[in-house]
Length: 506
Image 1 (cartoon, one colour):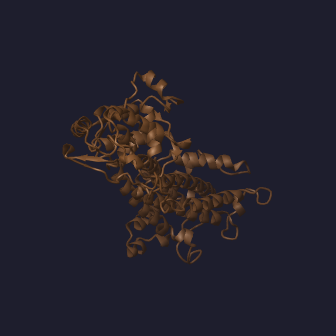
Image 2: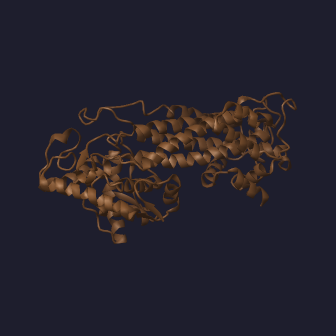
Image 3: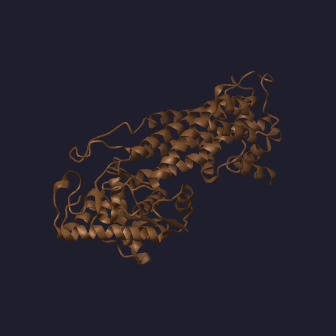
Protein backbone atom coordinates (compact mmCIF):
# COMPACT_ATOMS: atom_id res chain seq x y z
CA UNK A 1 0.00 0.00 0.00
CA UNK A 2 1.35 3.44 -1.01
CA UNK A 3 0.28 6.22 1.40
CA UNK A 4 0.01 9.61 -0.28
CA UNK A 5 0.97 12.64 1.81
CA UNK A 6 1.45 15.21 -0.95
CA UNK A 7 5.12 15.55 -0.07
CA UNK A 8 6.91 12.20 -0.03
CA UNK A 9 6.02 10.26 -3.21
CA UNK A 10 9.09 8.47 -4.61
CA UNK A 11 9.94 7.22 -8.08
CA UNK A 12 9.86 3.62 -6.85
CA UNK A 13 6.37 4.13 -5.39
CA UNK A 14 5.13 5.65 -8.64
CA UNK A 15 6.57 2.68 -10.51
CA UNK A 16 4.79 0.25 -8.15
CA UNK A 17 1.45 2.04 -8.55
CA UNK A 18 1.42 2.57 -12.31
CA UNK A 19 3.01 -0.69 -13.43
CA UNK A 20 2.30 -3.14 -10.57
CA UNK A 21 -1.14 -1.73 -9.59
CA UNK A 22 -0.09 -1.23 -5.98
CA UNK A 23 -3.11 0.05 -3.95
CA UNK A 24 -3.13 3.67 -2.80
CA UNK A 25 -4.59 5.50 0.21
CA UNK A 26 -4.48 9.05 1.58
CA UNK A 27 -2.61 10.05 4.72
CA UNK A 28 -5.08 11.28 7.35
CA UNK A 29 -2.93 14.22 8.45
CA UNK A 30 -2.87 15.38 4.84
CA UNK A 31 -6.67 15.02 4.66
CA UNK A 32 -6.94 17.32 7.68
CA UNK A 33 -4.99 20.01 5.79
CA UNK A 34 -7.26 19.52 2.78
CA UNK A 35 -10.33 20.05 4.98
CA UNK A 36 -8.85 23.25 6.39
CA UNK A 37 -8.23 24.78 2.95
CA UNK A 38 -11.68 23.66 1.84
CA UNK A 39 -13.30 25.64 4.65
CA UNK A 40 -11.53 28.72 3.31
CA UNK A 41 -13.11 28.23 -0.13
CA UNK A 42 -16.56 27.75 1.38
CA UNK A 43 -16.14 30.95 3.41
CA UNK A 44 -15.17 32.89 0.26
CA UNK A 45 -18.27 31.66 -1.57
CA UNK A 46 -20.48 32.46 1.42
CA UNK A 47 -19.02 35.92 2.02
CA UNK A 48 -18.79 36.93 -1.64
CA UNK A 49 -15.09 37.87 -1.49
CA UNK A 50 -13.64 38.06 -5.00
CA UNK A 51 -10.98 35.38 -5.55
CA UNK A 52 -9.72 34.19 -8.92
CA UNK A 53 -11.14 30.84 -10.03
CA UNK A 54 -13.64 30.60 -7.19
CA UNK A 55 -16.07 33.32 -8.19
CA UNK A 56 -14.41 34.80 -11.28
CA UNK A 57 -13.95 33.67 -14.84
CA UNK A 58 -10.71 32.15 -16.09
CA UNK A 59 -7.75 33.42 -18.11
CA UNK A 60 -8.75 36.64 -19.86
CA UNK A 61 -12.13 36.36 -18.10
CA UNK A 62 -10.48 36.70 -14.67
CA UNK A 63 -12.13 40.13 -14.19
CA UNK A 64 -15.64 38.74 -14.72
CA UNK A 65 -17.45 38.25 -11.39
CA UNK A 66 -19.52 35.07 -11.07
CA UNK A 67 -22.65 35.13 -8.95
CA UNK A 68 -22.94 32.80 -5.97
CA UNK A 69 -25.68 30.69 -7.58
CA UNK A 70 -23.48 30.12 -10.67
CA UNK A 71 -20.29 29.00 -8.89
CA UNK A 72 -21.03 25.30 -9.35
CA UNK A 73 -21.95 25.71 -13.03
CA UNK A 74 -18.73 27.66 -13.54
CA UNK A 75 -16.63 24.62 -12.63
CA UNK A 76 -18.57 22.22 -14.86
CA UNK A 77 -18.45 24.65 -17.78
CA UNK A 78 -14.68 24.94 -17.29
CA UNK A 79 -14.19 21.19 -17.74
CA UNK A 80 -16.53 20.99 -20.72
CA UNK A 81 -14.95 23.93 -22.55
CA UNK A 82 -11.37 22.88 -21.84
CA UNK A 83 -11.75 19.22 -22.89
CA UNK A 84 -10.23 19.91 -26.32
CA UNK A 85 -7.69 17.10 -26.55
CA UNK A 86 -6.74 15.82 -29.98
CA UNK A 87 -5.24 12.64 -31.37
CA UNK A 88 -4.52 9.18 -30.03
CA UNK A 89 -4.82 8.69 -26.28
CA UNK A 90 -1.92 8.50 -23.89
CA UNK A 91 -1.04 4.96 -22.86
CA UNK A 92 -2.99 3.65 -19.88
CA UNK A 93 0.12 3.88 -17.70
CA UNK A 94 0.29 7.63 -18.33
CA UNK A 95 -3.41 8.02 -17.51
CA UNK A 96 -2.89 6.02 -14.32
CA UNK A 97 0.11 8.15 -13.39
CA UNK A 98 -1.95 11.31 -13.92
CA UNK A 99 -4.60 10.09 -11.46
CA UNK A 100 -1.89 9.34 -8.91
CA UNK A 101 -0.03 12.63 -9.32
CA UNK A 102 -3.18 14.77 -9.21
CA UNK A 103 -4.34 13.07 -6.00
CA UNK A 104 -0.91 13.58 -4.44
CA UNK A 105 -0.77 17.26 -5.42
CA UNK A 106 -4.24 17.98 -4.00
CA UNK A 107 -3.26 16.28 -0.74
CA UNK A 108 -0.76 19.06 -0.09
CA UNK A 109 -3.74 21.06 1.15
CA UNK A 110 -3.23 24.22 -0.89
CA UNK A 111 -5.98 23.70 -3.48
CA UNK A 112 -9.27 24.08 -1.61
CA UNK A 113 -10.93 20.89 -2.82
CA UNK A 114 -13.07 18.53 -0.78
CA UNK A 115 -11.46 15.32 0.49
CA UNK A 116 -14.25 13.58 -1.43
CA UNK A 117 -12.66 14.62 -4.75
CA UNK A 118 -9.31 13.11 -3.76
CA UNK A 119 -11.09 9.94 -2.67
CA UNK A 120 -12.62 9.70 -6.16
CA UNK A 121 -9.19 9.91 -7.78
CA UNK A 122 -7.87 7.18 -5.49
CA UNK A 123 -10.97 5.06 -6.12
CA UNK A 124 -10.36 5.26 -9.87
CA UNK A 125 -6.76 4.19 -9.28
CA UNK A 126 -7.59 1.27 -7.02
CA UNK A 127 -10.42 0.03 -9.26
CA UNK A 128 -8.24 0.55 -12.34
CA UNK A 129 -10.60 2.89 -14.19
CA UNK A 130 -8.28 4.88 -16.41
CA UNK A 131 -9.55 7.98 -18.27
CA UNK A 132 -8.94 8.13 -22.01
CA UNK A 133 -6.82 11.27 -22.44
CA UNK A 134 -5.87 12.53 -25.92
CA UNK A 135 -2.14 13.21 -25.99
CA UNK A 136 -2.21 16.45 -28.01
CA UNK A 137 -3.63 19.85 -27.15
CA UNK A 138 -1.63 21.12 -24.17
CA UNK A 139 0.62 24.20 -24.17
CA UNK A 140 2.10 23.28 -20.79
CA UNK A 141 0.79 26.48 -19.12
CA UNK A 142 -1.64 27.19 -17.49
CA UNK A 143 -0.76 23.63 -16.81
CA UNK A 144 -2.03 20.71 -18.86
CA UNK A 145 -5.53 22.11 -19.26
CA UNK A 146 -6.91 19.92 -22.03
CA UNK A 147 -5.48 16.57 -20.85
CA UNK A 148 -6.54 17.14 -17.24
CA UNK A 149 -10.01 18.20 -18.38
CA UNK A 150 -10.40 14.81 -20.08
CA UNK A 151 -9.29 13.13 -16.85
CA UNK A 152 -11.89 15.13 -14.92
CA UNK A 153 -14.62 14.31 -17.43
CA UNK A 154 -14.26 10.65 -16.46
CA UNK A 155 -14.82 11.53 -12.79
CA UNK A 156 -18.03 13.23 -13.89
CA UNK A 157 -19.14 10.02 -15.60
CA UNK A 158 -18.51 11.45 -19.06
CA UNK A 159 -15.90 10.80 -21.75
CA UNK A 160 -14.27 7.42 -22.22
CA UNK A 161 -12.18 5.15 -20.00
CA UNK A 162 -9.97 2.08 -20.23
CA UNK A 163 -11.59 -0.52 -17.97
CA UNK A 164 -10.89 -4.23 -17.64
CA UNK A 165 -9.17 -4.34 -21.01
CA UNK A 166 -11.94 -2.50 -22.84
CA UNK A 167 -12.57 1.03 -24.06
CA UNK A 168 -16.02 2.16 -22.92
CA UNK A 169 -18.04 5.19 -21.76
CA UNK A 170 -17.02 6.35 -18.31
CA UNK A 171 -20.62 6.23 -17.08
CA UNK A 172 -20.86 2.52 -17.85
CA UNK A 173 -17.62 1.75 -15.96
CA UNK A 174 -18.77 3.77 -12.96
CA UNK A 175 -22.13 2.00 -13.00
CA UNK A 176 -20.38 -1.37 -13.09
CA UNK A 177 -18.37 -0.46 -9.98
CA UNK A 178 -21.25 1.20 -8.19
CA UNK A 179 -19.55 4.62 -8.23
CA UNK A 180 -21.61 7.81 -8.27
CA UNK A 181 -20.36 10.43 -10.77
CA UNK A 182 -18.63 13.43 -9.19
CA UNK A 183 -20.40 16.79 -9.02
CA UNK A 184 -17.85 19.60 -8.92
CA UNK A 185 -18.23 22.40 -6.39
CA UNK A 186 -16.45 25.75 -5.98
CA UNK A 187 -12.83 25.83 -7.28
CA UNK A 188 -12.67 22.06 -7.86
CA UNK A 189 -12.70 22.14 -11.64
CA UNK A 190 -9.89 24.68 -11.69
CA UNK A 191 -7.93 22.74 -9.04
CA UNK A 192 -8.18 19.61 -11.18
CA UNK A 193 -6.87 21.07 -14.42
CA UNK A 194 -4.39 23.76 -13.33
CA UNK A 195 -1.34 21.53 -13.08
CA UNK A 196 1.53 19.81 -14.85
CA UNK A 197 0.40 16.23 -14.31
CA UNK A 198 0.16 15.23 -18.00
CA UNK A 199 3.72 16.24 -18.85
CA UNK A 200 5.00 14.89 -15.53
CA UNK A 201 3.18 11.57 -15.90
CA UNK A 202 4.36 11.15 -19.49
CA UNK A 203 7.83 12.20 -18.33
CA UNK A 204 7.91 9.65 -15.52
CA UNK A 205 6.91 6.74 -17.76
CA UNK A 206 9.48 7.87 -20.34
CA UNK A 207 12.17 8.22 -17.68
CA UNK A 208 11.52 4.76 -16.20
CA UNK A 209 11.79 3.17 -19.64
CA UNK A 210 14.90 5.22 -20.41
CA UNK A 211 16.64 4.14 -17.21
CA UNK A 212 16.15 0.44 -17.97
CA UNK A 213 17.15 0.94 -21.59
CA UNK A 214 20.34 2.76 -20.59
CA UNK A 215 21.44 -0.26 -18.55
CA UNK A 216 20.49 -2.62 -21.38
CA UNK A 217 22.48 -0.58 -23.89
CA UNK A 218 25.60 -1.07 -21.77
CA UNK A 219 25.20 -4.84 -21.69
CA UNK A 220 24.66 -4.87 -25.45
CA UNK A 221 27.73 -2.68 -25.91
CA UNK A 222 29.76 -5.15 -23.84
CA UNK A 223 28.68 -8.02 -26.11
CA UNK A 224 29.56 -5.88 -29.15
CA UNK A 225 33.03 -5.44 -27.68
CA UNK A 226 33.34 -9.22 -27.52
CA UNK A 227 32.03 -9.65 -31.07
CA UNK A 228 34.58 -7.13 -32.36
CA UNK A 229 37.37 -8.28 -30.03
CA UNK A 230 37.52 -4.79 -28.55
CA UNK A 231 40.29 -3.46 -26.32
CA UNK A 232 39.47 -3.69 -22.63
CA UNK A 233 42.17 -1.24 -21.49
CA UNK A 234 39.94 1.71 -22.43
CA UNK A 235 37.72 0.80 -19.46
CA UNK A 236 40.50 0.84 -16.88
CA UNK A 237 39.37 2.55 -13.69
CA UNK A 238 42.31 4.99 -13.60
CA UNK A 239 41.30 6.58 -16.92
CA UNK A 240 37.80 7.39 -15.73
CA UNK A 241 38.75 8.43 -12.22
CA UNK A 242 41.20 10.87 -13.81
CA UNK A 243 38.36 12.71 -15.50
CA UNK A 244 36.13 12.79 -12.44
CA UNK A 245 32.58 12.18 -13.67
CA UNK A 246 30.96 9.58 -11.35
CA UNK A 247 28.52 8.41 -14.05
CA UNK A 248 31.34 7.80 -16.53
CA UNK A 249 33.31 5.88 -13.90
CA UNK A 250 30.24 3.79 -13.00
CA UNK A 251 29.56 2.93 -16.65
CA UNK A 252 33.15 1.77 -17.13
CA UNK A 253 32.91 -0.31 -13.97
CA UNK A 254 29.75 -2.03 -15.18
CA UNK A 255 31.35 -2.80 -18.55
CA UNK A 256 34.40 -4.27 -16.79
CA UNK A 257 32.11 -6.36 -14.60
CA UNK A 258 30.12 -7.66 -17.57
CA UNK A 259 33.32 -8.60 -19.41
CA UNK A 260 35.08 -10.24 -16.48
CA UNK A 261 36.70 -13.55 -17.56
CA UNK A 262 35.99 -12.92 -21.25
CA UNK A 263 38.46 -14.54 -23.63
CA UNK A 264 37.31 -12.38 -26.52
CA UNK A 265 38.30 -8.95 -25.22
CA UNK A 266 41.84 -7.96 -26.18
CA UNK A 267 44.59 -5.72 -24.81
CA UNK A 268 46.03 -2.66 -26.55
CA UNK A 269 48.58 -3.74 -29.13
CA UNK A 270 47.34 -7.34 -29.23
CA UNK A 271 45.25 -6.87 -32.41
CA UNK A 272 45.22 -3.08 -32.71
CA UNK A 273 46.47 -0.14 -30.67
CA UNK A 274 43.16 1.73 -30.32
CA UNK A 275 39.49 1.08 -31.01
CA UNK A 276 37.13 3.47 -32.78
CA UNK A 277 35.33 5.99 -30.58
CA UNK A 278 32.02 4.09 -30.63
CA UNK A 279 33.83 1.34 -28.66
CA UNK A 280 36.53 3.23 -26.79
CA UNK A 281 34.29 6.08 -25.63
CA UNK A 282 31.32 4.04 -24.36
CA UNK A 283 31.83 5.24 -20.74
CA UNK A 284 32.18 8.87 -21.78
CA UNK A 285 29.06 8.91 -23.99
CA UNK A 286 26.84 6.60 -21.96
CA UNK A 287 28.05 8.26 -18.76
CA UNK A 288 26.96 11.67 -20.06
CA UNK A 289 23.50 10.24 -20.73
CA UNK A 290 23.41 9.02 -17.12
CA UNK A 291 24.19 12.57 -15.97
CA UNK A 292 21.13 13.76 -17.89
CA UNK A 293 18.98 10.94 -16.51
CA UNK A 294 19.96 11.89 -12.95
CA UNK A 295 19.00 15.50 -13.62
CA UNK A 296 15.67 14.46 -15.14
CA UNK A 297 14.85 12.18 -12.22
CA UNK A 298 15.58 14.96 -9.72
CA UNK A 299 13.16 17.36 -11.47
CA UNK A 300 10.44 14.73 -11.82
CA UNK A 301 10.59 13.83 -8.13
CA UNK A 302 10.26 17.51 -7.18
CA UNK A 303 7.36 18.00 -9.59
CA UNK A 304 5.44 14.89 -8.51
CA UNK A 305 5.31 16.37 -4.99
CA UNK A 306 4.63 19.96 -6.07
CA UNK A 307 1.59 22.22 -5.75
CA UNK A 308 1.02 23.32 -9.35
CA UNK A 309 -2.47 24.84 -9.43
CA UNK A 310 -3.66 28.43 -9.00
CA UNK A 311 -4.60 30.17 -6.80
CA UNK A 312 -3.03 28.52 -3.73
CA UNK A 313 -4.49 28.75 -0.24
CA UNK A 314 -2.19 29.28 2.76
CA UNK A 315 -2.65 29.73 6.53
CA UNK A 316 -6.18 28.39 6.62
CA UNK A 317 -7.36 30.85 4.02
CA UNK A 318 -5.75 33.96 5.49
CA UNK A 319 -3.49 34.16 2.45
CA UNK A 320 -4.72 33.24 -1.05
CA UNK A 321 -2.29 34.02 -3.86
CA UNK A 322 -2.49 33.79 -7.63
CA UNK A 323 0.85 32.70 -9.02
CA UNK A 324 2.32 30.62 -11.81
CA UNK A 325 3.26 27.20 -10.43
CA UNK A 326 1.30 25.65 -13.30
CA UNK A 327 4.04 26.76 -15.72
CA UNK A 328 5.76 23.62 -16.98
CA UNK A 329 9.16 25.09 -17.87
CA UNK A 330 11.17 22.95 -15.39
CA UNK A 331 9.72 19.75 -16.84
CA UNK A 332 9.82 21.05 -20.42
CA UNK A 333 13.58 21.60 -20.20
CA UNK A 334 14.09 18.25 -18.45
CA UNK A 335 12.11 16.40 -21.12
CA UNK A 336 14.06 18.04 -23.93
CA UNK A 337 17.27 17.04 -22.13
CA UNK A 338 15.95 13.48 -21.75
CA UNK A 339 15.20 13.20 -25.46
CA UNK A 340 18.60 14.58 -26.50
CA UNK A 341 20.49 12.35 -24.06
CA UNK A 342 18.67 9.19 -25.13
CA UNK A 343 19.05 10.06 -28.83
CA UNK A 344 22.81 9.92 -28.32
CA UNK A 345 22.59 6.34 -27.04
CA UNK A 346 20.98 5.39 -30.34
CA UNK A 347 23.54 7.41 -32.29
CA UNK A 348 26.56 5.62 -30.82
CA UNK A 349 24.72 2.27 -30.93
CA UNK A 350 24.13 2.65 -34.67
CA UNK A 351 27.86 3.27 -35.20
CA UNK A 352 28.61 0.03 -33.35
CA UNK A 353 26.08 -1.77 -35.56
CA UNK A 354 27.96 -0.48 -38.60
CA UNK A 355 31.21 -1.85 -37.20
CA UNK A 356 29.56 -5.23 -36.64
CA UNK A 357 28.21 -5.57 -40.19
CA UNK A 358 30.77 -3.74 -42.36
CA UNK A 359 33.39 -6.22 -43.68
CA UNK A 360 35.83 -3.35 -44.16
CA UNK A 361 35.79 -2.70 -40.42
CA UNK A 362 35.99 -6.25 -39.02
CA UNK A 363 36.99 -9.82 -39.80
CA UNK A 364 33.49 -11.26 -39.39
CA UNK A 365 31.35 -12.62 -42.26
CA UNK A 366 30.14 -9.63 -44.32
CA UNK A 367 26.91 -8.26 -42.82
CA UNK A 368 26.98 -11.29 -40.49
CA UNK A 369 25.48 -13.23 -43.39
CA UNK A 370 25.43 -17.04 -43.20
CA UNK A 371 26.07 -17.09 -46.96
CA UNK A 372 27.44 -13.73 -48.13
CA UNK A 373 26.10 -12.67 -51.51
CA UNK A 374 23.26 -15.14 -51.74
CA UNK A 375 21.99 -13.98 -48.37
CA UNK A 376 22.13 -10.34 -47.23
CA UNK A 377 22.15 -11.02 -43.49
CA UNK A 378 21.97 -7.91 -41.30
CA UNK A 379 22.69 -5.44 -44.12
CA UNK A 380 19.34 -3.65 -44.01
CA UNK A 381 19.06 -3.79 -40.24
CA UNK A 382 21.76 -1.13 -40.20
CA UNK A 383 19.67 0.95 -42.66
CA UNK A 384 16.70 0.71 -40.29
CA UNK A 385 18.83 1.78 -37.34
CA UNK A 386 20.24 4.72 -39.31
CA UNK A 387 16.70 5.81 -40.20
CA UNK A 388 15.64 5.83 -36.56
CA UNK A 389 18.75 7.75 -35.52
CA UNK A 390 18.03 10.36 -38.18
CA UNK A 391 14.39 10.63 -37.08
CA UNK A 392 15.55 11.18 -33.50
CA UNK A 393 17.57 14.19 -34.62
CA UNK A 394 14.32 15.83 -35.71
CA UNK A 395 12.40 14.78 -32.60
CA UNK A 396 15.22 16.06 -30.36
CA UNK A 397 14.68 19.66 -31.50
CA UNK A 398 13.78 21.35 -28.19
CA UNK A 399 10.05 21.94 -27.73
CA UNK A 400 10.78 24.25 -24.78
CA UNK A 401 12.26 26.99 -26.97
CA UNK A 402 8.84 27.55 -28.55
CA UNK A 403 5.99 29.62 -27.14
CA UNK A 404 2.67 30.82 -28.57
CA UNK A 405 0.61 33.35 -26.59
CA UNK A 406 -2.91 32.26 -25.63
CA UNK A 407 -6.07 33.52 -23.86
CA UNK A 408 -5.99 36.91 -25.60
CA UNK A 409 -2.32 37.33 -24.66
CA UNK A 410 -2.98 36.95 -20.92
CA UNK A 411 -1.00 33.72 -21.04
CA UNK A 412 1.79 35.10 -23.18
CA UNK A 413 4.55 32.58 -22.47
CA UNK A 414 4.00 28.82 -22.35
CA UNK A 415 6.31 25.84 -21.90
CA UNK A 416 5.27 23.22 -24.49
CA UNK A 417 6.36 20.72 -21.83
CA UNK A 418 3.84 18.06 -22.81
CA UNK A 419 5.11 18.12 -26.39
CA UNK A 420 8.64 17.72 -25.04
CA UNK A 421 7.56 14.72 -22.95
CA UNK A 422 5.79 13.10 -25.90
CA UNK A 423 8.82 13.60 -28.14
CA UNK A 424 11.10 12.13 -25.48
CA UNK A 425 8.85 9.05 -25.33
CA UNK A 426 8.99 8.69 -29.14
CA UNK A 427 12.77 9.00 -29.08
CA UNK A 428 13.02 6.33 -26.38
CA UNK A 429 10.90 3.96 -28.47
CA UNK A 430 13.26 4.53 -31.41
CA UNK A 431 16.31 4.02 -29.19
CA UNK A 432 14.91 0.70 -27.99
CA UNK A 433 14.61 -0.50 -31.58
CA UNK A 434 18.16 0.59 -32.37
CA UNK A 435 19.48 -1.21 -29.27
CA UNK A 436 17.41 -4.23 -30.33
CA UNK A 437 19.19 -4.24 -33.69
CA UNK A 438 22.59 -3.89 -32.03
CA UNK A 439 21.70 -6.76 -29.69
CA UNK A 440 20.76 -9.00 -32.62
CA UNK A 441 24.01 -8.19 -34.41
CA UNK A 442 26.18 -8.36 -31.28
CA UNK A 443 24.99 -11.80 -30.17
CA UNK A 444 25.35 -13.05 -33.75
CA UNK A 445 28.94 -11.80 -33.88
CA UNK A 446 29.73 -13.21 -30.44
CA UNK A 447 28.43 -16.63 -31.49
CA UNK A 448 30.64 -16.54 -34.58
CA UNK A 449 33.57 -15.95 -32.21
CA UNK A 450 32.44 -18.73 -29.88
CA UNK A 451 30.02 -18.58 -26.95
CA UNK A 452 32.45 -20.59 -24.84
CA UNK A 453 34.90 -17.66 -24.99
CA UNK A 454 32.38 -15.09 -23.73
CA UNK A 455 32.29 -13.72 -20.19
CA UNK A 456 29.84 -15.56 -17.91
CA UNK A 457 27.56 -12.52 -17.58
CA UNK A 458 27.42 -11.65 -21.28
CA UNK A 459 26.86 -15.29 -22.19
CA UNK A 460 23.98 -15.55 -19.69
CA UNK A 461 22.43 -12.45 -21.28
CA UNK A 462 22.94 -13.89 -24.78
CA UNK A 463 21.14 -17.11 -23.80
CA UNK A 464 18.15 -15.10 -22.59
CA UNK A 465 18.14 -12.92 -25.71
CA UNK A 466 18.18 -16.01 -27.90
CA UNK A 467 14.74 -16.90 -26.56
CA UNK A 468 13.49 -13.78 -28.34
CA UNK A 469 15.55 -14.05 -31.54
CA UNK A 470 17.17 -17.30 -32.78
CA UNK A 471 20.55 -17.54 -34.50
CA UNK A 472 20.52 -16.19 -38.06
CA UNK A 473 21.24 -19.23 -40.20
CA UNK A 474 19.34 -17.92 -43.23
CA UNK A 475 17.63 -14.73 -44.40
CA UNK A 476 14.11 -14.20 -43.07
CA UNK A 477 11.75 -11.24 -42.62
CA UNK A 478 13.94 -9.48 -40.06
CA UNK A 479 11.27 -7.00 -38.97
CA UNK A 480 9.89 -9.82 -36.85
CA UNK A 481 13.28 -10.28 -35.17
CA UNK A 482 13.61 -6.55 -34.45
CA UNK A 483 10.09 -6.38 -33.06
CA UNK A 484 10.61 -9.49 -30.92
CA UNK A 485 13.91 -8.23 -29.52
CA UNK A 486 12.47 -4.78 -28.78
CA UNK A 487 9.51 -6.35 -26.97
CA UNK A 488 11.90 -8.56 -24.98
CA UNK A 489 13.95 -5.52 -23.97
CA UNK A 490 10.83 -3.62 -22.91
CA UNK A 491 9.64 -6.52 -20.77
CA UNK A 492 13.04 -7.32 -19.26
CA UNK A 493 14.50 -5.82 -16.07
CA UNK A 494 17.64 -3.72 -16.15
CA UNK A 495 20.73 -6.01 -16.32
CA UNK A 496 22.60 -4.57 -13.37
CA UNK A 497 25.81 -6.38 -12.39
CA UNK A 498 24.59 -8.15 -9.20
CA UNK A 499 21.53 -9.52 -10.96
CA UNK A 500 23.73 -10.77 -13.80
CA UNK A 501 26.13 -12.44 -11.41
CA UNK A 502 23.28 -14.57 -10.09
CA UNK A 503 22.05 -15.25 -13.61
CA UNK A 504 25.51 -16.33 -14.73
CA UNK A 505 25.83 -18.71 -11.80
CA UNK A 506 22.37 -20.27 -12.20
